[in-house]
Image 1 (cartoon, rainbow, N blue to C red):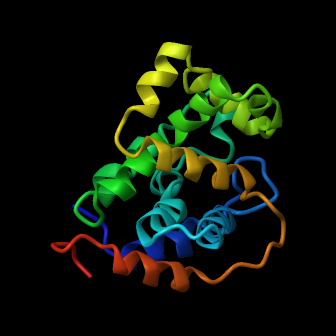
Image 2 (cartoon, rainbow, N blue to C red):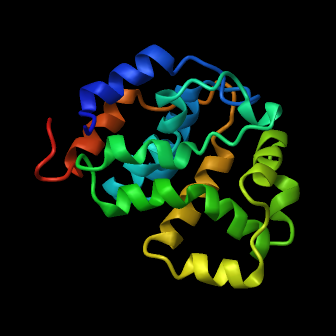
Length: 186
């Protein structure tokens, strides 16, 4: 069953205070910062919503803090999709689904990208399949909404700033409400 926006708010209330995989921010702070960077870049409601929810899979499954340090790829980009399908359309879902592959893509096309990743992002990169080959990179970027996932990834990489002021969760849930699928529960 798809989540409603109230369910998403409850997930953040219950689990959002956990540390974001060895970074100096919580899960909620990371989500809000990613959405804020998207909003500041002029992204539309769907991409801002994807930025807010791209890591909600971490909140839906408890693998403990920093699962990558224990050699676990939690596949968070996929675990959220069944709960968000029906609430949002493909633009939101695809950006979430492909944001991990976007990291693999960026490592393949930008010589300095991998070195700039945080320690946890580098560790999870290996668990997530490593850097794409040129052929894999070409196949990835041809997918629907892959370019949006790449943009989301770049905001995601920046969203680890201790004490960065952002609008509250309610601000972004109101944006998410505007791009909710027509048949979705409120």
